[in-house]
Image (cartoon, rainbow, N blue to C red; front, side):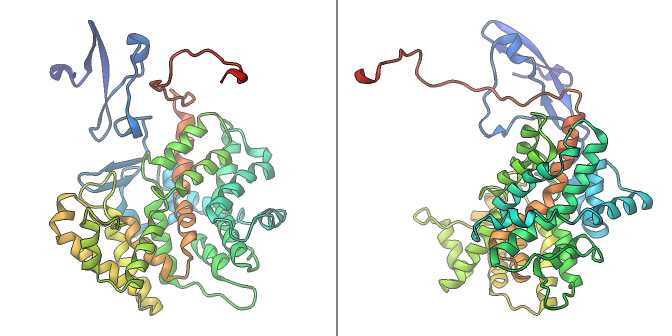
Length: 434
């Protein structure tokens, strides 16, 4: 138990007749943590925390979240300001280098990214070897891992120059890799990058363009995608970020660590949530239900229906990203002249849930996935590509966390403990006696 008088400095823990003093660490925003790094050495005990919900794996200066107040900041800057005033590459620089770039720094960074967008021609053979129905996330993870075979000159995670080269290559090439995964799945020719576009415009060109006609980047859609990428850029120690850090702690190269993070994001409990929102809205539409009817089904203990896109493990009152993206969603649909029954259902669900005591009491508010899927759907993105676009946005956050990991003076390979619950010592039995 904690000693209140000493809380600012130490916490006191009693195990049997032994008492140990544990340092209390306070972060820059007042968050407190009990440092148990010496616990096992001093007591022989470990802590048990399924899902790591109460365990801090690192000290980080990248992203701050206050789930109770709905606060999200990158390097101290509120997400609302970045969404209004910045762009994705500038935010990427902020996350990875720790500060907003000046004009020269931003120009150098942007130009470097623009000149690394093209893939080695042999990547065409790589994609050709994949089945047409390969999930884009599987293709992206494999392709990012394969970058280590094409660029063995920049794999040392402790060489500053090699790290910068790999970082720039990865950010530049990931839109190309993702768009190629999509083009392969639909049997369309790959589009070479067009460095006349900006980062997001180039991705749109490679995703939706074709060699038969000119492609014009819609500015409203481009801004909406840029905004989505900003909102997804980092989110503290979530599952995929923790995966990237844990894999990175083995001293594997950047490409290997990010490939693992992509696979983690693929899971339906993590990055696949926006696809589940679209599936839910489509099911409501196809069954001819009203939003109220579906909400009542979701509330019933006798029904397995779930209201997807509401609630968040971290945010307990509202997701600040959802407020930002809602307006962009309407802007995109208005610009495209799209009449979206899915959006109408989404708006109805939100209005009902925000007033319904069942959801209010449980603090189930719309999260960022609720409207992002509607945007992706409206611009013609197939639902199995939603998570790949999420990965594109999250990429600079993963990289920033990987870089920070390697600069940590307390760096060590990740190796969680366990409480063994299996059988005690057994004897081996010859097969004829089993």
